[in-house]
Amino acid sequence: MNQNAIIDDPAKSTEVQSQDSPDVIGQLLVDTDLITGEQLRYARRVQDRMPGAANLMGVLEELHLTTADMVRGALKNQRIHAPIGLLLFELGYVENSHLKMALTVQKGRPDDSIGAILVENRAVSEEQFVDVLALQLGLERLYPLASAIDRRLIRKAAQWFRSRDMIPIERRDRTVVIALENPLNPEHVRAAQREFGKELILGIASRSEIHQALSCFDTKQADAPVEFGANVVVDTVSQIIRDAAKARASDIHIEPQKDGLRVRFRLDGVLTDYERYPIAMGRPMLSRIKVLAQVDIAQKRRHQDGRLLFEEDGITHDLRLSTYISVHGETAVLRLLNTRSELLDIKRLGMGPLMEQKFVDCALDAPSGIVIITGPTGSGKTTTLYSSVNYLNNPHSSIITAEDPVEYMVHGITQCSINPKIGITFEETLKHIVRQDPDIIVIGEMRDTFSADTAIQAALTGHKVLTTFHTEDSIGGLIRLLNMDIEAFLISSTVVSILAQRLVRRVCPNCAVDAALAPHQMARLGYDAKDLDGSVFKEGRGCGECHFTGYNGRIPIFELLVLNELVKDAVLMQKSSYEIRQLSVETSGMVTLLEDAVHKAVQGLTTFDEIIRQIPRIGSPRPVSEIRRLLGEAS
Image (tube, rainbow, N blue to C red):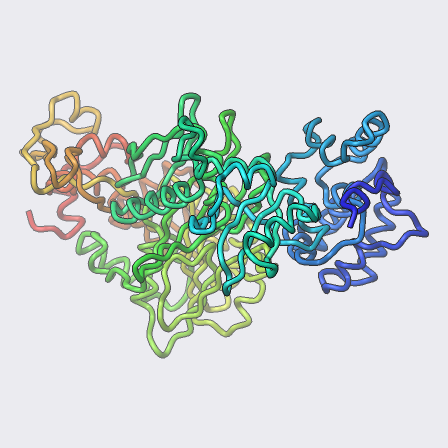
């Protein structure tokens, strides 16, 4: 079979779709039930009316009929009898002008393929071209740099494989899987069959991917860095995830820098260095992570999100991936999610006795209404939310959730994980959630006016709604709802409570010592000596238990606003945040975030530095003795 005849036939490769030529790509999408025939005809009509040459993928996305990932998934493993140029254009990889340029260049260089010309002129990356070529040929797209290559299959010198642009990957049911740069080259296929047997699983990879993976096995190159090899990349990624889980890190940051690849862990809310690697490790490590997260490994020009499960020794680690394009290359952040079913009891969250009682009596035990838990990202909102769900969970109540993603698996409730890739969007889920006859609705995040309206309508019809919000403090939650054009009377009649929180680092109990505040430190908190009532803060000197940081773990700081009649009237009158805050402090017994933080510092649980770093200082705190009384703590 002539490869160029399939790959580089220029017939109609620079035209959108001739009326008298078969619509191969569109018909495949119809045959795989991704779109209907009527939708395809409509898309083609729209495409004809659009100025310039519009590709089919762009039109389908513009009409909200499908997405690029869904189209590539539908075409996967389908042999597509269409020119590679047409495929690249219709799938949105290249512009029509790029194809015309490639054809013009090819006239003077007839031995060069259109693909090689497009890659040479950076109209498409080598990896993207190979992705589309795999779709055209109906072959598996293999990623040698991100695969755990079976070393036992490398029975010849790496140069033997390099000269044939191939590398064996693994065995599947005793059949060897082999990646080739050109699977249609009969000489190379026969060479592979002589080495591994006639029954082979052929896949496709780029030449650079194959050669870089082979560098791990090249004994002739003394200076070839083995750490760049595929197996070492796989082991390195696995070790990073293992160490992060062992250290109880919340996030893993993988960041290419000018002089190397930096990996950091977020421990107790603070980023700390883990390891540095050669910059050349960045690309294969990102490829490996992308494969695990099932995102587009060839896409290096756009930010992407994904999710992966990492299993080892019977333990499953659930991680959320975010990639970001930077000037030095792609960065990746992996967030380690909680998949455990063990939830904190509401009494173990760390609220003062009276605050905890008020939260349970006035918020959780209320027959209906909205309970909002607010704070910045990483402030422990989800833990508090599901402690509340755990308190409310009983055989006589129906609890249903909409989350992005599900972070805690809870027995006895119905949980839905948002997945826009398969059409499970936040908007669509919220439309259906009230039809499931729930008693309690949990909305993972109130992110926009639509979700806020849904929560309010559910509360008005007698449901109890628990949700989270991103605001500075509890009063900020009310103000943001007003700024989202939610009517004030709806807010005052449905919101029963807003709980704001932060996480601060806990003083290491193993090395804690007294740390009296200097006058200027007291002043920064809004205190003088008599207000502190002789209380002394603590700080950690640093020891082996806390890795010499002085901190070990984190504790929550809370601010509970319960909307009494006076606060509701203030909301109806749309008073300022300052006025609502003053009224809440004076009439509802609200303890502010700053006051709760000072109280916990006086107990020796956190430090002055953590309060300054994490807690908003709005207004002057009351004396420590008054805070103790309001929280129900013994003097």
